Image (cartoon, rainbow, N blue to C red):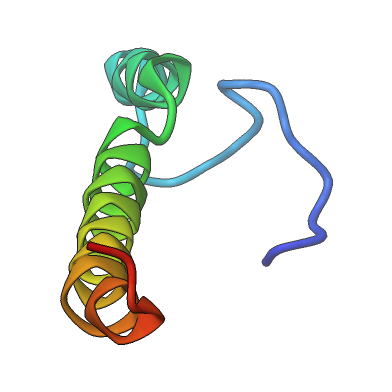
Length: 65
């Protein structure tokens, strides 16, 4: 559960050994690298679309040479 208390390893959990906890801890230590990469790519795409829209729509209509 999301709000469950964290139990220490070896607290009677069936099917999870000490190696499993070590693997989980290693994954958690790496952090949300994939999510940050996806968010960065999405932000870059949105920014590129905005710049293209600005250059191809707003600048030509402004009347500046």
